Length: 343
Image 1 (cartoon, helix red, strand yellow):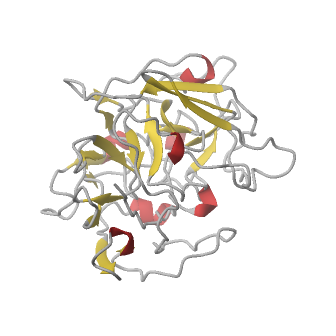
Image 2 (cartoon, rainbow, N blue to C red):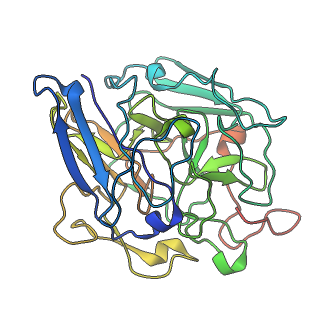
């Protein structure tokens, strides 16, 4: 089946901080006989949509924009190797300077998706923290046929990898480390600590994402799937199909409501409301920031509001080894040798 997601996620701190904002959806169908003609426009209530920027330009802050359909919009069936949703990075600009170019490979065994990566972004590296950038050695292994667990697993105050992007970058939760003290364990989006693609580097010079943006500038415009959680379930962008043929689509959004100041201790500043931030809203995701799609399989959705990518694990996260298992220091504990710089 063919899916036509058509949304770019604005990643400005000011837009993300407004967790109570309401995305309104306009559906335009050029040819009612084909799902390929479906277009979605997501509009912030106070901001008009803008034209799509070119791949080498940077969208202005505080806007959501209309995007073309991904070039590879067809989703893999459950149990099918998803190698086709991983973008070709051979022609990307890379992080610039003398940094290594990104290298990502994907293969499937009988029951696993195996992804190796050097963890380098395919776009210009912007120093958002005092940390440098260095190539890593990641190998992630997740279930090819994930199953929903009997109980969900909390990620509250979990500091470290929750998944990975199809471009080979680690995905972290909506929580920062213990430094700087004023923003300890705060919301990195709210605190403006991320670059335009939702990432920055940690004290191991490791680039990772706390939020995702599905556009060409971030190399995530070629597929509806942006990454995978460690429990094996895919992470989609915020546009989802309402029927198997994808003749009807909608923008899905977080149900978390800001009730405090997320500058520090981010999880204490948000409350999940199944009715959404405005109450009685439709297309509100569950507490894990996901939903069951029309084909009966679960998927997470990246959103412009907290928790941005994953709110909890619906499946059982697989244990990783080596660099793929790297975690930030536990809550309140600096790494050996002293306090880390801001992450």
